[in-house]
Amino acid sequence: MTHPNRQTRVALITGASTGLGETLAEFLSGLGWSVILTARTESDLAVVAKRLTDQGGTVVALPGDVGEAAHRERLIAAATTLGRLDWLVNNASQMGVSPIRPLLDHPLTSFEAVLRTNVVAPVALAQLALPLLKETGGLVVNLSSEAAVDVFPCAGIYGASKAALDQASRIIAAENADSGIGVTLVDPGGIRTRGYEEAEPGFDLTGVPYPDVTLPFWKWLIERSPGEVNGQRYLAQAGPWDAR
Image (cartoon, rainbow, N blue to C red):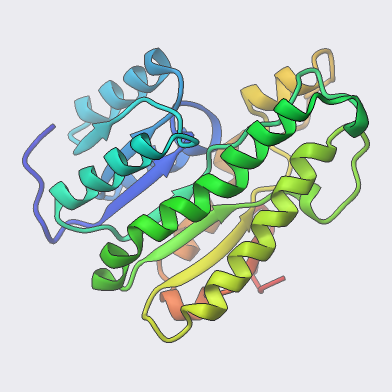
């Protein structure tokens, strides 16, 4: 890691070792942002971190589980060391049991684990990050899903958790509307990820786009002020990006 300029924008991205998180990390790093990356699989995260560092980026890679309080504290401590935090991107998520199965066939321990990762962790990270975000007029970006609003049999735990995150995000946005920060929801749409493949093995993913299909949206979002997008929900694959 190179010594950061404290005026350089900083993003903390969870679930950054593959898929959308990796794509967004590479995009922001390419724009000169410093990035704090986390994911549960240390080997995958190390590959991403090395590639971005080799490209000249300032990268802090901290493997771990965002469902654990101590790890969340380490992530915010890293942002404090860098001197600021502009975006908190809550992208890490769990699907539940893979392959997916009916909601009532899930063990309750799986349901609790999904809620801890998909709902509790994003709220807890936002709580810890709030002082830093207020200093920069920063943005919390919570990744939603089409499963939060549509009914997909056998994706009940995931869908319920994302619906809960949607509502929690809107409430936090309303409660902090005058604070200078923003909280926004982003539904990336159906994209080809490792989690998708594991959840529905054998499903034909031909025609399902890769996460870079969302890059025009991220280019648009980076130019918006937090107040402009606060409390709004966006579909990342289709512009123009009017709030949903």
